[in-house]
Length: 264
Image (cartoon, rainbow, N blue to C red; front, side, top):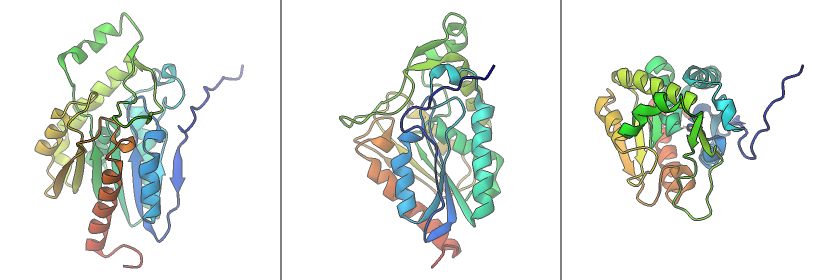
């Protein structure tokens, strides 16, 4: 019997672009838990306009239905990003990794494991730890129910909607918690320059996540930028341009410092 594949939600498809004037510089974008590339697409397009090669993969179990995510875990999500990282590294002189929420945590894990391949990180409301005591009960709750209400579309901007699941699969959430522990334990292995954007009003990821990252990484070149008019999915919110322009400036500064930008 042929396996029936779940339909991809509109806008959830992966996005890859060969780049333009500065195609020797690559950027890997990582979306969040229960989300999809749709939340990162405007960011990806801003990087393409700046001339960079861009890879925005769809993580396993995402972009279809929440039941599909239930059958995956953090090793699957990380492996997909490692493949994209390897492909960019083979084509580019330098590669930067950028992530939103869980994507920020995965970006940090990539830096911990593949540091020499990564020139810098841009993180938006990164998720690396529990947000409240209730989340400690996920394993117990998971024995009683398969899912809980979703976390998608925490956006302040009227009319902006994130393509994400309306339910959080608890088996996958339990796997995410295991990823947090790994990321936390190895933050001292992160030496790359880091630009971190944080929304003071975030109803999904507590600000203590960003504080933990900045306190434990070994990077000497770090900056935190507040997004005062945005909630969690800031890449689709009022302050999105601040993220896009700031990340392009971050990449340009670091690339020009090494003299590797084409045409520099």
